[in-house]
Image (cartoon, rainbow, N blue to C red; front, side, top):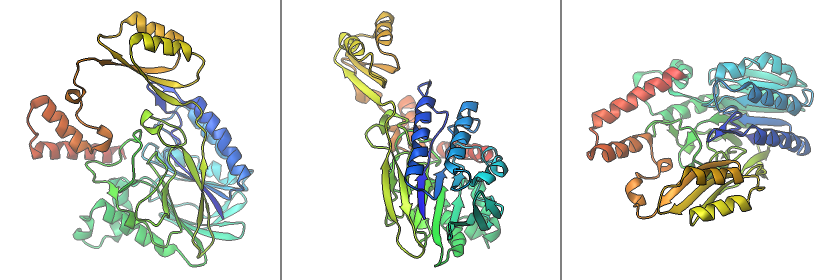
Length: 405
């Protein structure tokens, strides 16, 4: 069985207020051709289809048009799970209509897929958190764990927790408990897969993800994934990578487009896994195009910046301008730059004589929310916050996150 793993499309996402939907449409057109040319049996989209729980109509149309073309009149299965950006109920609502096209939509870890025909293939068994699919005479058992917030995880695990001690286990331990329970559905004569949307320890964030963890509490260890899974398809992290400690079985496909200037240093990909029952799978990386690059232009002066904008007026790219100067940039100078080069996202003056270290409270992408708050508090008040203040803030944010889910 040939399975293509992708994730984190974030349809409808903006960059500094600029729409990326034209680039997303180009990606989707190429993605459809890749699936067709690579003879894919099943497409797995591991969450964050949209960038918002209430996506624009154009983004929804792009998604459903793509699903219809991927299905090839129901010949191919497409499995979609919700991520932390998606509204799980809204995503799964189209399930009954999508079924005829071989499309399976799963909103939460507690969701159950209806048994029966899905296009030209069939779901032969299912329950909370798993499905068994028959495709071209081969059977695959897939553990399905859409974004498991604390609330959703507790809902699906509560009945299996025998005592208070189990209910007080860490998030990672409870995720392992869930996968251990579900992996009993695996068999030696089936292709055994898992798909989820979460943050695995040791993974390298790209910089444009919305954090799913508070103070590190929602991070899972790589050992939580089922040992019998031949491939684990993950979403959430935007940099394609293998999860450490999983023997190359668990992978993040990453986002298909550079959604942040911190992402431009690495290539975008999706993965194709060739899997047979009771055998180690082989994985092929498919590199994706850059449809409109994000560039950072470092200029030595204001005049240098204006000249660079004029010289590159026909270069189709997003631009962050960083300009060395001994004064602030005038409005007329900014107007000259933007009239010469469209799609300038940000103009940052690097003022001579200003100590950058004095302005920097650290690399935010490398810190937890707790650390960021402590640094900010120290910078503003010149004293560390009391531990009870930090804990109270984290608890309030956790409650809001749970209510939102």
